Image 1 (cartoon, rainbow, N blue to C red):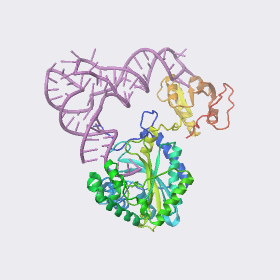
Image 2: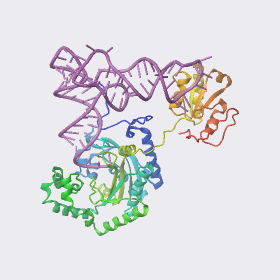
Image 3: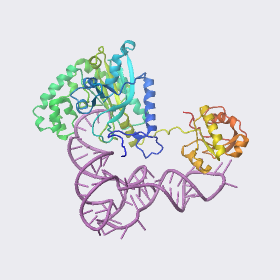
Image 4: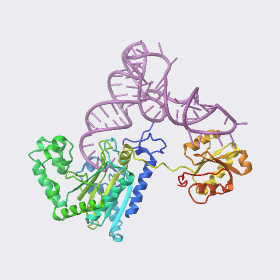
Length: 452
RNA sequence: GAGAGUGUAGCUCAGUCGGUUAGAGCGUCGGCUUGUGGCGCCGAAGGUCGCGGGUUCGAGACCCGUCAUUCUCCCCA
């Protein structure tokens, strides 16, 4: 019996080869996560980590019983102790639960939180859709003004800018308050009632269950029938309208491009007012890379004080697929400064000690353990893209030196072991250049810092 | 939940009308210097042809089943 990863899950592996999918390549993940974390710090968002499972009721209440996610896509189960728990299908509910439970609002009237972690949905996997997928997201709690919306959206846009993706669309909509949305849904149902019999099977079902979602249909007949449907934004209450208009002005001021889309509807019930989504043409049918919106009643619903909030979630796998398709350049993973190439058994012993000393001096180093010929060790040094190969044979041991070979220039120098760490650190980019008398190691390229 | 496609070496894939010994490129390992890498040349290792059954003198190929996987619908990140 050979085991395979469960359906809809995937392994993320060391990269090296560009043949792998980026969504399976750990260096791409590190890169993306690094950009996300840097920007969160820049915008003042602090990380929180919450459990990957919660009481089933939390998700059912927060996300909405009628949504597809809850009605058919959650991983629900009962523990041995009889508790009903659910693997989290999205990030916001758990973060808000933690916010309320720990009374974070008492210390931080404005709480700016970010998170990154796996979510689970039981659905049929396709390109860019996984049963276990990762999202990076933020939540801004306690601020109701349009500036908060603008900041959250600007941060999202900044992530993609820094990643280097273009070819994206930011779609923007407002569904208004719960009351104005209800009025709109009523009007929509009134409009659709005489037409519903001509609509697709799916939309007939939605008509009864979640009329708003009819707008999301990709069926041509549905789109035609709904072309003259009432528009959500015409039903906004005055405050929501003002908020929405102010947000648009702010986005324009900030240079964030967006496209108004009154048909944008999202899968969670908790949204109020602002809704947005980032779309890419590069991920097959799963074009939505990130999405979010405002949820002014959710904290209250979860037992906290009435607190406005807004946030987004960004699909990491999907974003990586889009980056790969768009051939966005990604920095290489860091390489060791030194790779030790021992010649003979005595040299191997000496290299083990030397290796340990280099690492103790905070220099990324590695060595050949296979006992192969020097040629093969140098090939290995080349393969791991080491900046220097350190060649150690009986001669070098006798003299207390190593041959330091610059892998780019092929220049070599005998360097006393006592000076090795100092010299490598200097060549790693720091100022203190060694006074080694032999060949000049003229480094016209400034190397990648060897350290981390 | 529904539909379609694909499973041959570590990876990407050829394999004709069913024909006897299973193919290439890349990768890996070794040789081309006694201790000097990238390019090139030579060589080797590596296969339950996803698995089970069936048809046939003969199956990697055809049929059935099964598992895995990919894509699409639904829905979402």
